[in-house]
Image 1 (tube, rainbow, N blue to C red):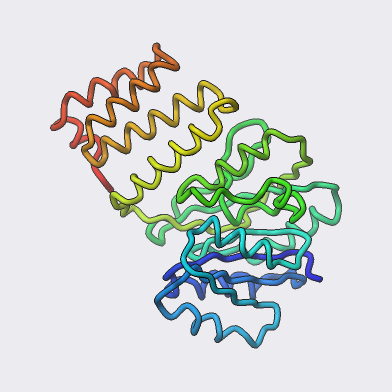
Image 2: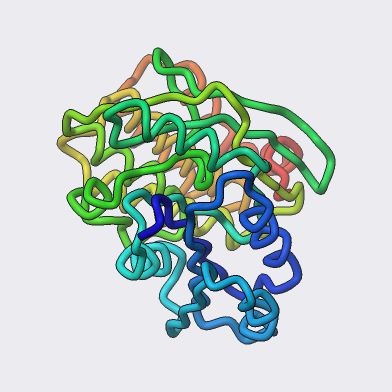
Length: 281
């Protein structure tokens, strides 16, 4: 059995998927399997993956389109490895990523391990980040390895979510006591686009609203205020001023003295000014 199962969910991303697969093939650590979960793609995904079938560690699984969370859960169900790493199909692992993770796995009794990442925007290097055990840091797919037993105990990813699925998953993990390890190396090249459509904002609005409802009793007031404010800003970006106003009022009902929220609430009454500040990317 492999020590680590890398799971790549993908949907119509054949034009970038090969880079993600090669980044796993190029690892200096070799005790792994790679499961590519095709989430109902209509492009050449199946044909592209078949090119790599000479390596028996690579497995292709197909499901009708159910979303990224369901695809990750399906990959985890099929995984043979003791540990899981979820890699998005438009990102790549650094060549020593699995070596760093495996060293930490074999040396310590952790059940979750975080590493750092490099950020690329439109293909250009933009920033880098390392995990910080004393402060908030982004938990991106590809930057953490988790024991399969812990993933199953936490009931996997919430399949209702199209955005913030990692955030919601780790919020549930925060409710239980686990042993966490940290790697102070970059294990992922994370790719972002500067071009964001309205569907992105709608997905974020829907997902954060779902998290707020699902975890109303466990989210902190600060987090609730932040999520309502993010939802409000997203409504401003798509020029839905009525719902933006409602979202900021919900944030103010939790923290009525938040200057940032008050300013944004007032902006909802200034559509022309708002469109200049909150342009859709």
